[in-house]
Image (cartoon, helix red, strand yellow):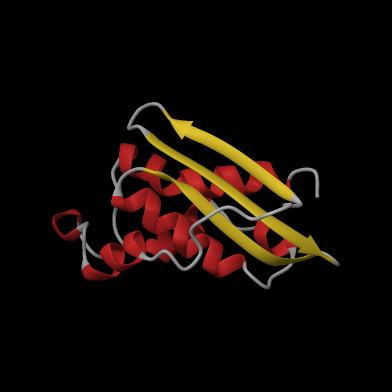
Length: 124
């Protein structure tokens, strides 16, 4: 893992700017929104499920590079995968995806997309 002095490495910056999966899904099967009042991050994730597979997923919102990068990485990871797969992703998995050490507040930023996704898929 990269230490805190390198928190905004090139990979994190690239993912935070990546708009490949940014936007709103039209007629979504699931949607969830949440804000992190501690830091001001705000995200929404929406998607379409067909036969138990996430066939389309996007996110919108604003926030720090960590929350934006984590959201981009997460939707990329679950696209084309089963809802069961997505529901099993853990906070530790998010940390591994980011591959950086995070303090308490930054962990909340990194975990926000996962919390939103799990809420959105709770009824699926």
